Image 1 (tube, rainbow over the protein chains, first blue to last red):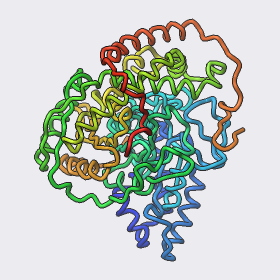
Image 2: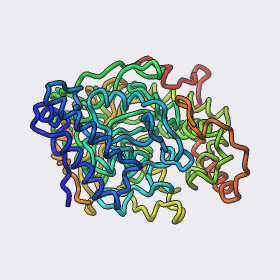
Image 3: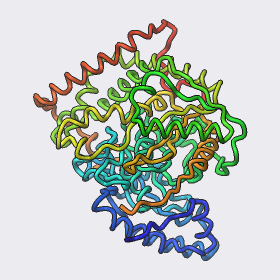
Image 4: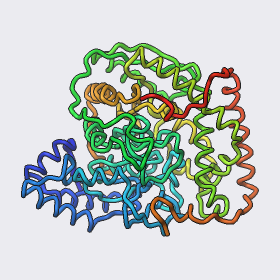
Length: 468
Length: 60
């Protein structure tokens, strides 16, 4: 078995690379060997840039020796979801329809990683066009969960989640429109951060829904997520929605001091969480209380209307983005995405406007709650990872009933634009990871990540790559 | 081929093609489920002053 090459935090790893005590070439070789070993079962990558990554690693090694590090991620191998453009490479978006695409520019987020010294090791598999939560992809294969490859990794950033959890890279980039970072993070047992809407530029990223699309890091630890956010956040003239919340400089996650936790209850949150997920969340709430937090129960009155509004806006915008190709080339889409796009095209314009009015009501309610508490708490996903065989559209109808539960508890924070993070808090008896979700006020990733770090430390989660 | 951000599947509008019967049935079922979910919006009793306000309308 090839051992996972990364066991340190990104900051520690960068420090030993800068000091010349760790070879970026050996690190990349270790990642490539791990990818070769796990890929037959995980199908986490659409493209691996082995030669280019090794050449970059050699350059990083030379620069470190000469005392010229590029930035805080110097020599660190990172994977990106295949939704981000990299000049000269295809951005498939997990779709057969884009196999021949060639990007002419590099996405701002990827460019920022490269400028910070990161080595892009490959592009990860995803749910087709990011429009789904399982990453069972009819064109590039179903992404397996490193905890049990017969189960899904979640989605849509499933390849990124699986690659980080299996130790194929030190961290990864994902995107989140209805939970697509937090769902795979929870199901794979890693940390997934959806920052505040507008924190990170979306320039060069294939859209799903402009009102909600958000870029974010998928990492082994909360500290790693903070470091990546610091590299990625900031304004960009190419994305008018970016930069409203400025950069992020809180990479040193000290104790949060006194803090208040709002445990979300009521419809959606009390609707049938799996027993083991429910028990894991109870433990998480107790650990946060034990770590100095005051925990109380809170409710969002219009949360169900908000859920309907989020569906309406997302589906209508997805249908609008695809209207030039769909349904003209419908045979080239997977059967589930084909149906969902057709469904989105049936939404009346009046409903789209009403949904934006509901969005404003829910944003107002949630912002009022966040004047009373520092963070909101709920499970990231109310059920453990389902089996691939049960949700593969090619093998039956199970995907229809799986979609809603997997994203039930993440979408509120896309509707309201809040920063939200999934932190691993345990495993089911079958060994499948469970994540707790924390969300904070807009722009308060500093507070969010400090409290998340308290939970991470209290849980004692070891981000050890699974054998697969 | 692409120019800047535009992608090949966006570049040329594909001719319209009819949806197959199975997809149409699935869409009808989806729309019925969506209509049931939409009842929660009808029940919300929005006021005239509740503006449509996407996230970029809100102060940071």
